Image 1 (spheres, one colour):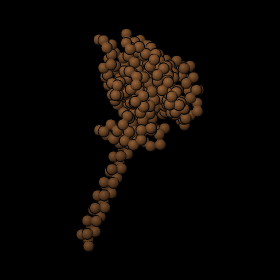
Image 2 (cartoon, rainbow, N blue to C red; image 1 turned 120 degrees about the vertical axis):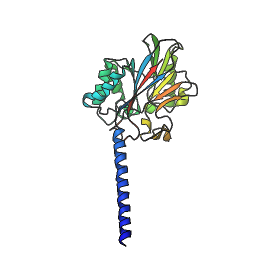
Image 3 (tube, rainbow, N blue to C red; image 1 turned 90 degrees about the horizontal axis):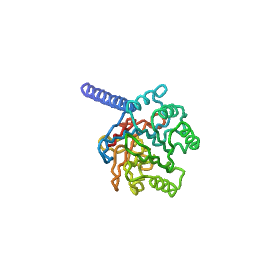
Image 4 (cartoon, one colour; image 1 turned 90 degrees about the vertical axis):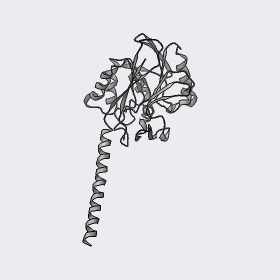
Length: 282
């Protein structure tokens, strides 16, 4: 009996150690998943030698906290040295105060050409008109089915954007997309900023060089090595368009950011660090 009891106690002790070890590893991994990272990559999209456009994509900030006066995020932005900053929706939140978002917006508006489109949370806040007006007032380009042409290092760039379709009819959203593309020039680099990645069939109807989106939060719980998320809004379980670069059926590329949402979400990120994305387009 004594031998059996000793074996049982030893087994229970081992199981307890394994259980708490797993809990510890999961807790540490979850905490590490809150650290923001920079994802930098190169895309070959420009005809001609020596032209380079450095684009910074920021999505899904949700007015989350990134240090006192947002210094953690602001330092990351400045170190990226972007030519253009793209704000891909849900920059504000429908529950969190606007303060953190406004600190970042006012800082970058003074230093970089900035472009913004709405996300679903701006609409859910019922203050989307106020938010758009604020962005325009501080000098950020608000794209609403529109397109702005700028020169970056000698390269003409058409920056187009569409509103999030939360409060639009499908026909209205498609009309925005069509109108934005109609303002582009085939000889220019053609960029589209849109909050959602999933309407790829609609994007593929137009010859944009690059579409930039967020919204999916990389599926919140990201599956390592598979580039899939457990669940993404409007895509469901095992979502496909959650993180990274995708080639669409017409040859256009689409870049999807994991975004920066942290305390705004009911569940923690897992295997899924928040990020800013730097795209060296040449």
